[in-house]
Image (cartoon, rainbow, N blue to C red):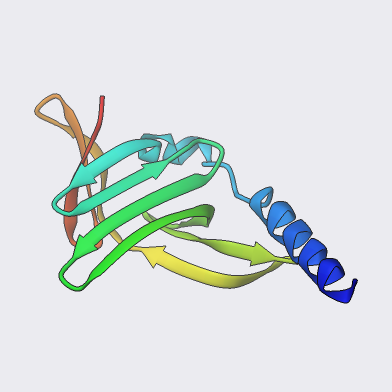
Length: 117
């Protein structure tokens, strides 16, 4: 019975943590969409859900996390449990979203990304 209670509590914490994603602020809506570049895919919804895939030699990442907020052009993703970040990662945006030659582009963690239209 105790194991069931612990599993139930853990499920509730993760379910409630998912509801804590920060929505994308109005001045950052250009970040919203599905982006792709060399060995990297990034998707950000206006509700603050982030999907990230990256293939590097020897390691592959496939994550679905919450947007925790913006700091300048950079943004943080992770999981918050009970109001404190238990896991956080910053995406460094050296070139924020802008239109180039009819396509939206930005540079994240050194990778140039193009937004799917």
